Amino acid sequence: MNKFLAFIICLILSANVFAQTEQPQDSLIKISSGFTTINEKLFPGAVVYLRNDAKQVYAKHQGIEMYCDRAVFYEKSNFIKAIGNVRMIQGDSIRMNSKYAEYNGNSKLAYAAGQVNMKSPESTLSTDTLYFDRARQQAFYRSGGTVKDTASTLKSRVGRYYLNDKKYVFLDDVVVTNPEYVINSNHLNFYSETGHTYMYGPSTITGATSKVYCERGFYDTRADEGYFVKNSSIDYNDRNVKGDSLYFNRNNSFASATNNIEITDTINNSVIRGHYAEVYRAKDSVFITKRAVAISVQEADSVYIHADTLLVTGKENDRLVRAYPDARFYKSDLSGKADSIASKQITGLTKMIRKPIMWSGLSQITGDSIHLQSNTVTEQIDSLRVFYNAFIVDQDSSGGFNQIKGKELIGLFENNEMTVVNIDKNVENLIYVRNDTDELIGINKGTSGRMQIEFEESEMVVITNFDQPRDITYPLEEIAENARTLRGLDWRGDEMLRSKEDLFKGKPLPQLIQIQGLPLPEVEEAFFTKENQEQLNKNSSLSKEDLENREEDELENIQDPDN
Image (cartoon, rainbow, N blue to C red; front, side, top):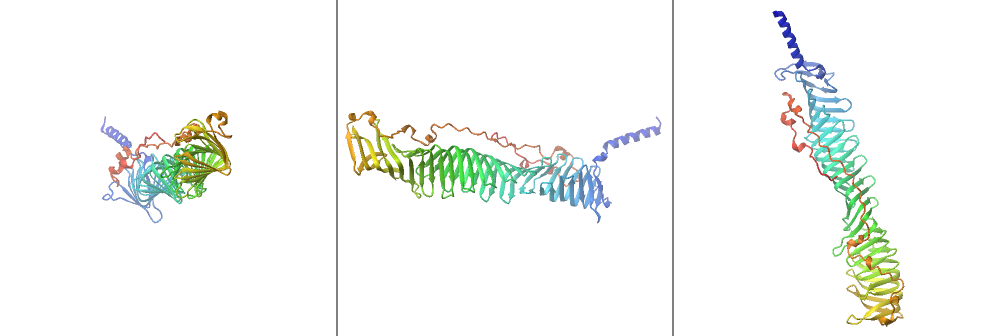
């Protein structure tokens, strides 16, 4: 081989090696400007591009455009630093302004600093420093940022924007401010196109008339409605609403709850429980069903009211409780049933309507309707009235029944115990009579215009007849079994409510709705990749530590199976 041929071969091999190390032309950043200069002392290996009066420096790379007052371009490493009035544009999706920016054409990682403002069609992000991974179409900040959309302003210490999904993930001290409310959370996912928000971990939504708490929830920031699960509650017009799931609509002043509901009236010291409820703030009303029970919490003895449906209406000092159908109430020394029960707070009057029955101690009281009057200050029962067909009966130890009936009945109470009963008009009685040694000696039957009964420890002790009384005590053997009852007697002792659990006696457990939970947040791979660190340019203002993923900035892996 002659020397000339060897030289040609060396040139060809050298050219091939050079071609292998050169950047492909379509991957290089393209730059144009009014002026260029080289300053090896300040910027070794770089070309400096300067704007002129007419236009800024212009750079372009695979779908992204950049404008700035000065650019320092390192062609061999395909790396550019942009300084002064920086603008970066990616098609119709991103417009970003800053004082300073860097862009690595190989890793497609951009960094912006100084009054960073990134606009998408749906929202605007402002921060001090921002990283933008074009390869994955994600932006990230961890020095505090603010996002504004058409309805709200969102702030957090850490934020990540997924351009393709139009989704923000906000972490650490998240605050969403809307003219109507403020959301506080430590983890919130926000979709800028729809305004949909997903909250994870302890979160609150605070408005002028309500406060929502949840540990997992969804809120539509534009429609002002949300769905909350996992330890959720709503403070709403002096009421606190809790349930396995809650729905809330601010525009309609409406909330609903499903499964294991507890509604606490903080003003009137009462609690309502059930498995489905609706709350209308504007109407000051609560509707609750599915094993519904209202509890008036009293220091000595709480009152429980249960029915298939409970409806509580009225302002905080004038509540009306309506229970229907198959309404029941219980307190330790008084209980009853009726088709419906209505209790009005301001008057202290409770009405038992249609087929009412009440038990006071051992006595059963029935009539066409029964009214209970409570003292509005002490909340203790003062009196009761039975209208038409009043009938009071208790069972004697012999198995027979002491019976008194008349047109109307008025009972008086002391310390919530019935002490005196007055029965008026067309009074009839059948009483088992015993001597001082409690030996049964006969049955007293009689009539009168009025009767008064005195009670001690829930037992009849003194009976007095007025207005033409007529009564005879017969020996027991002189009265046949079928003559030992007054017309209308209906002994229902087996229905007596002896405990608060008896409120639900004979009723099946409700079929609870399967709660549709909210999806757990996706745990994405860390923002900074190994490639980002490996391709960090030596002339960058960043260090490898800046491109490290930090545990406090990452999304926790939530593995709670309860949605």
